[in-house]
Length: 114
Length: 111
Image 1 (cartoon, rainbow over the protein chains, first blue to last red):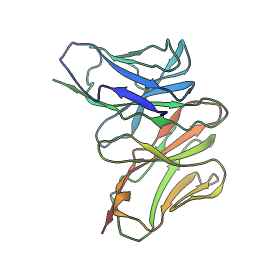
Image 2: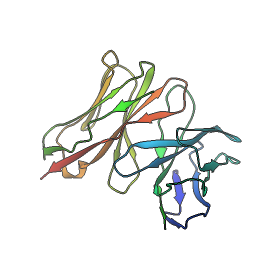
Image 3: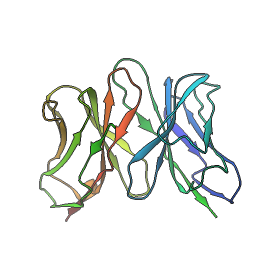
């Protein structure tokens, strides 16, 4: 059953802690993305990766870090440097081939800072 | 600054009516256009994509693209209460992997 999984579904973080959000896909997609969504807002791109061992900053990368050691995995670390991390985090993937790039989303992780 | 603009709504329509959702974009180099549906508390789900000027129909959904006027629209025929959701417009550039998302239009379909 192909798809994108994210874990955990809910995550609570204390001030000053780093936390890592998991994203895995078995769609054999080359490209993966992390977005952040705040209430009443659109999606803002944090980081994206077009191939293994390579990634680029999106529009709001400060306070976040990623790795892409395997094609199917793209974990996101929210560091203590991120001043307002409470949000809904969405991982997406696309085939990355050709000119068009439909992106498909995982179920999301809701992060709350206590 | 690449922008995608949508009316936040809510757009209220009665059951059975046609819902019309609109989106404008600023970058003339945009080549791919997507509509996502997002239920409250859930992740976005791709429902339509269009790449060429004109209309594209899929069941009750029709996407319309006018590159000269830089707008894309989504029509939902025979609207159902289950269509009540936020609809996100997304735009991509040829050769780029990134999409730019609008803030979404909230649709309410009343029984």
